[in-house]
Length: 425
Image: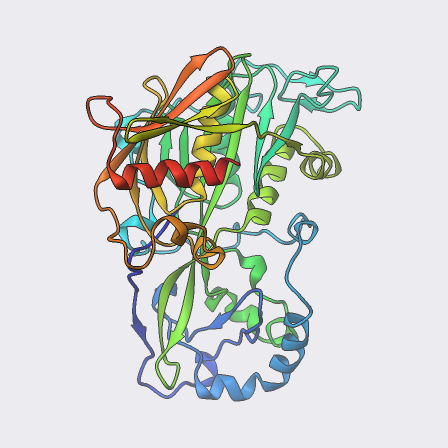
């Protein structure tokens, strides 16, 4: 969900001293799908200098081999579901990353008290045996023998845990993220938002011959040149189950300058396959095997329903042919795919508080966002209120409203409605 307009950068420059062998750390992969960086050793991993000329020469042989691997093609969903593709545990704790304000989710952790940690069974919820013998956190049913299933909406997936409420699941999610090497930046059960701090996927660093023979001695100095952050959204459903979605945000270090001795951090697109990989890991935390989790990911059920535009004077609204709880989730997922950042949300009032930002590069490439906000259109700067409210038992209205709850007929508000319509269909 996390966007920049215009992108701000974090600059750093190489040390002026001539590197010695002790300074050199080699990470040679500069491929298509993932770019790795090597840095001279400093105490601050976010301030290490860019790849030096000496390091480049020493890594020539390794670079040739790694380039062949990198050119073999981009990763598929099955690649990301492999057990060795995600590893944030080995990453050293990164210092605070000074990123553009619109790249980070609003920190509301101080406004809500997190529930105390409880036993591994998720509070008072006792695990139930599946027909396969798993002790699952969900409640198995004839339709969901594992006590959970996955649904998809476009390139987004979310997990539905049957028969469990968010308060029963929340402690398990806290443990999940910390067990996987993350620090929680936002831990707000009252709003159902859990956000990690920026972290590095050490699995992105290739285990080449140089690293195996020498680099392990200074492995902490290796860097993938990327940082990831994850936002978990937890919602209760009308039938007593819980929806869980994971949204990925990313930063990438880009070498700058003619001699490539400076660098800056820029936003890069979210990775839906990485989001799916973490959903699979969450299912394993909840009691499924690796094979069962992958099965539910690949057999995700379509979640979409018809969305119609209703015109009322100079304002337009959307009608979603679904109950409120499912429409609420789908609107949140749709906002994740737009250039609007959710600052806060109030499910009781049916409100998402959003503001415009500009880091969703895939939308720019697809031309979807530019269809509604062209390069000549002034970008909105104020906060907008996206209202989701029941209209009937299986019909929900979506509108942009003002502070008084009245329809917002401004041009920007109507563009948001059009953008949501495009995302929901």
